[in-house]
Image 1 (cartoon, rainbow, N blue to C red):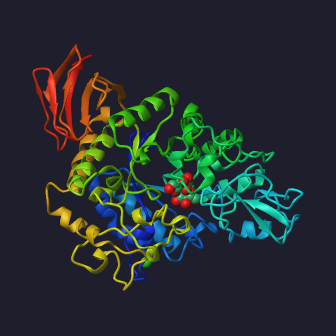
Image 2: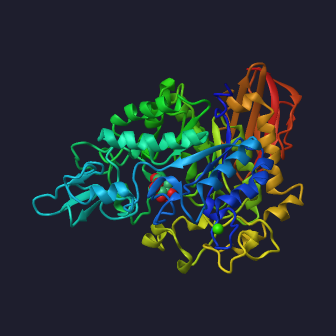
Image 3: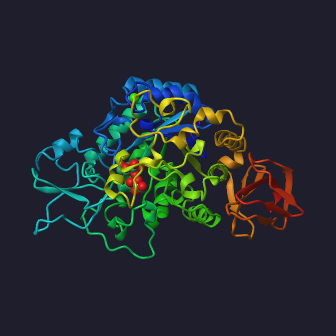
Length: 546
Ligand code: TEU
Ligand code: CA
């Protein structure tokens, strides 16, 4: 027995393998590179890493199109490299969570190659195949998130197949029991290898409506904006009632969990992209202790960094996610880096980077950090010629895609490609302004964003109230994000001013400030019952009463 609850309140560092560290000079990051940089990851004080896909893949969607779930793509290395990486991570006390992209496969996956060959082969029903309408058009109005219809004609079977993303990412048919079995076999493969958990890509997309009903038009009061669909993408104009989030998924997630529970200390974090219905979905998937451990949504991944927005998200979850557990993040490999989303000027960037991690570390939930945010990296500005993301290439310039957050880690300012690769060309450029924020530069300055991250994560770790304590909003000034975190005998008050103006926080009646407790980086003081906060400032104190 170990620590079955390690994931509750854990800090998870997301590694995008292609952009972390190259070790064989091909301009692409690899597993050996991750192993080499594990001591750095450990130095941050995180509990786990989440690795974006490193499986065999034609890389049409940068590895989120898997052609073999049980092998490593040669660009990343071998299974032996993976084992070595995991052993080293475990030796350093870091758990390893891997990405499972099972809603769809690559069209090169042997399952799909077989399925598309005829209507009678053993895997004929493994994907979502349907006859055309009498006029030859697609079976219904479903759309692809990456643009265009959600159906592709196959000339051999003379049927359409469904795809939520690229045409080269056909959706598996989870209504077929054998598909569930096959997928769980691959999960078992990694469990047996010793991984500590799974990030489940598009976990609410596994099932579509069995009757393949058309989606109704978008209801104006629904908010699908969280999916980041660019304006020119009609995806947002439908209510996605039938192409995802079907009730059958709950039973599959129970099967998934039952398998996991045969092993010790394993976890899951599901990615839920369900517009306004995300909340309900997270509640359904994480309740009862017999489905997922955690989910994350796109709620904090949008443009807003205000007290009102963050309070709203947390309160909404408190209502719906009762016994479940949420995972919060400001950045990942799918969205613009948060420093560029939230900061209004260049000078503000490090200030925002520090404030954002202080807020995140104080929230109730587990937290995901995305590689490079600990350096305060801004979104990279890339030319069209540099783009590799098919989503960006399709919608440029209305939407520039996701390459701007996927550029390589800057390790050493003085080296070519900031030490990411010794190849002549890196798969995506390392922008000059990011090289200036390299790890080695920031190591030298006590006040760097990097050191602030370390101090803040250490602070979180040393207070159990921050890890899984209760969270209660307090105070009347709605412009401020003020809450307490409480566990056992410990109660901490946090006040954050996310505005650009100084603000006062009147201590609520009955609250008694205890011994001062400095949250790293913030020194706002209590002046006769009023906390005086500067712009973009924070405050923390031990409290009693209330
Ligand atoms: O993302 C699912 C998803 O909803 C995203 O496509 C999102 O809409 C978009 O990236 C917002 O900018 C997952 C992976 O995280 C993503 O990288 C993959 O491209 C996608 O699934 C398909 O596998
Ligand atoms: Ca490499």
